[in-house]
Every structure is written in structure tokens, then in C-alpha cells.
Image (cartoon, rainbow, N blue to C red; front, side, top):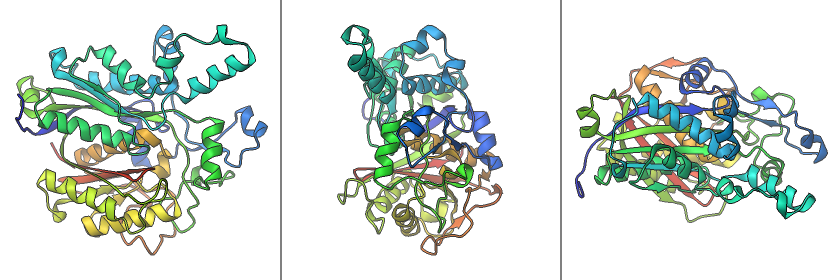
Length: 410
């Protein structure tokens, strides 16, 4: 199949997020305008006197659905990846595919932070003999992809892009390229993250990147709003099963949409700050349209990265206006989900697919006084019914990583 180009169709969806333990509950909550942000009650919040005391924690603990023996061998980041991947695989009908024609691409921004910190505590306080022999497989950033690959018996390649908050979207872009090149027939792709721990909150807080609206957790994440003061850290995973259209048709698989094109770029500007005019982001969006064979006018919806940081939201809005225009209906799901870091692009990509499938765009929570620099048609209040044929999801990460994914209806 080398050198063959093909359409890429989406046959399976899976997720576990602060809004729900699976794709259906997550989508229902997102459409209904519910928030997954809560006050943190862990004792370490007071012990370290953290200025940030809110986060978007998982709605369902992964250990509730995973066998106990398996769960104990995986970091929380790996656990959420397995939950989402297994749901997506079953949703796709558990495709019968030769192992050499099956690949896995799951990105993460940080990886097994809980394991690294927990095992280091054991080493320092108890001694080396208490350190788990599974420490390295549990903390390595390729752990989520590796374990999903082992679970499915994938031999067509297992990849783990690490591109900060663009990791999940980059995983989907890599999967698209593998399928378009005919390297494999099926790819299980997405992103996973679970690092709500003191050092992560403290580090982001020291950067002044996070909201400190501790008294109003559900109102803290405010994409595009004048009163935004930073993002809210979340955790979760999102996974899609992507297939060559010919392979999916041959097995009679249901299609939930198409990943029609992808675009990637880099800012070359700053390690954490976005390029203020959104030039690199705009190039990624334009590339996704070009590779999909779409025009600006074809895009009816944009699922925005919008983290609720002062500079980032305006730069992204400029990129959207330049690459697409101001006609598309926009939503920013981090108002409800929080920022899932390496999983964000994958989970929000799922929302893009579902918006196309159902013809409905979820509301952006907490957008009450829009920043005049945004100038986009952002959905607020309640979900909006819209006839859609094509949509774009964009994701950006520290280091200047830009990824845009263009989806079309099935």
C-alpha cells in the first residue's frame, strides 16, 4: 500500500473527562453547559499554601472500570488512556485487522508525573528497596501509547508525540499521515494526561498562567472573556479509531466523520508565549484547509483552543479571522472541561466530530463580557443548532507548537 493516498474516516470514539467517564456522558454534559471544575480538597493544598485551589478532576475514577491488577501496574495517565482507547475500540466494532496494519499514536504533555513524584518520595523517605520495579514503564511519556499498543497487539507502529498542549492533536495528525500514506489500515490515536499534583499547580501558578478564582470554581475558566485570568488544570483522555476509507467500507464499519486534513507549524517565537499576531497558528489552520481541499467558506465551526489566558485567546482569534474569517460558529470547551494539556486536542477533536454529526455547537461557559479583540461568533448561554459540513479544531502548545485538524461530516 506504500504511496497510496486515501480518505481517513473516524469509526470509533472514546473519552474520560471531568464531564463524564465516557464519550456519551462527556458530550451530553458539554452540550448542556455543565462545568467539571471543582474545589480541590486534598490536604496538600493547605500544606503547600497553593494560590490555585481548583481543578477539573475526572468525573469517574479510571480504577472504577479497570481491573485492579491492571490498574496497579499503570500510572493514572496510562489508566485514562486505556479507558478511552478501549471504549473507542469497542465503539469501532473491534476491527479485525492484521497486527502489522494496526498502529497506535497517543500523545501526552507530561506523562507519568504521579508515579515519578510518588516513587521519589518512597526513595527519599523509606529507601531504594521500596521503589517499584515498574517505575520506569509507569513514568515514561510513551507509556500510554505503549500500553494501548500492547493491549491491542499493534505491530504497525506505536508513537508518542510530546508537544505540550498540542500533543493529542499532533497524535491525530500523525495518524492521518500514516493512513494517507498507506502504511497501515487502522490507527488508534489521541491524547492522555493526569497530573493534578502540587508541583504542576505550583509551576503554572508561578508563571501566572492559571486562574485563582478559587471561590467560584465553575466560573473560573473564562475563554475570550474580559475577566479571564488564566486556565484551570484538568485531566482526562480522548481517543479516536481512524481507518483508511477503503478498509472501513470493506468491513461495513459505521462512520462518524472524516479527518479530512491537518496542518502543523511552529512559532519560533518564545518557549511559553504565543506569537501575538497568531501568524504561526494561522498557517497551521490554512494548511489544514489546503490538505483537506476546503475553502474558508466551507468551515462552519471552529472548536477553539482558547485557554483563557490574556494573550493567547486574542492571538488565536486573530489567527482564526485570518485563516477562516468571522463567519464560523466558535466554541471554547475549556470553560467546561478545564485544560487537559496533552489530552486537550484529542478531546476537543472528539467534540468537533460530534458537533458535525449532531449539528449542534456547545456553549462557551463564562463568556459574559467578550474581549473586543476577539471579534468572532462565539456560542454562549446554550448550545446552538447549526447545519455543518466542515469544522476545524486548533491546538497550541508551549514551545510554539501549532496543530489544526479539519473534519468533515460522514
